[in-house]
Image (cartoon, rainbow, N blue to C red; front, side, top):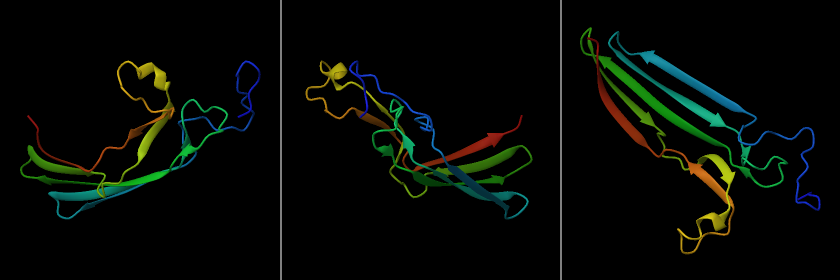
Length: 136
């Protein structure tokens, strides 16, 4: 780490903004099997990103990830539709966000707080939703 006597870290030009991946690729496809039945899916890839708080880009990055999702619907009548969504089809484990915190801030709430200052937001695991949509 490059810091001064006050502990200030100098950010030099060209550093990447933490929490914002440099690359994202999103692709999707929908297909009408019949006029009433539609299916589709999408794949999202997000490049690695710096933890929020690492403005000088000095520590490890949050890993890149990809996720696949499916969706479909069937029009029962003009007013009634059944639909389904599957998020994180392959139940991949990854983090969507990372930042730092002070482990001492939870010393009264947690008996043995971890010494690691990093914290992540895990992705949603495999989730399946089914619903009914009505037009009134």
